Image (cartoon, rainbow, N blue to C red):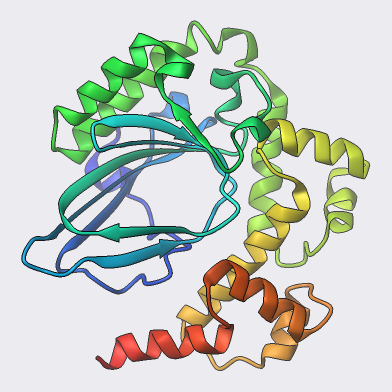
Length: 281
């Protein structure tokens, strides 16, 4: 396990209210051990204390990743979700999670990730009784760093058994590289753009994404572009929505606004106004 300074990584993307609740809300992310970096993006830990305070709603946007989440005394595997995640935070509680690299959970699950799309399953359905013990071990500690160390041991212990046959699967490494390119390269606006990058036909790309990621390439591209829109709005920049929509690959502003509202729950302009309201409060 890396030191505290080395393992903590940058702020998360996709949280719709990133600057609210600092006095009562904690969110930390840590990198896994070196052996797991090809499969695990990071571990995450959230805790809150709203005792004597009213419940508050927190929303996050979906990412094309599989998560293991431990909360309320149980551990579950969550597939890629198509809608934003909304959680009401009240009283005092904490949650520990593992965010896998795109394709990173496939060696453990060994089935198409689309089977997990928009649903979840008990951790023991994948790892058996070892999953139950892992859940108990995480719940028995309140230290986030210790939780990450426990997770390292748990996942590494399965690399020599369930993952042996697929440990060298080059598709996982390739998928991870493509996903990073989609996220960072704003010039990738369509499946056709990705086809030129990968030199693969559309059906081949779709099969790979459905198997390893859990959703299609078109969905991934659109979600990352909408994540970019949210990030730009959060920076407080003045935006020409029509031009911005075209930059993100939309035919017109109407289609962009429709998709943004469907995902975020409000139009870009209203969302920008809501962030300004928080700043001035």
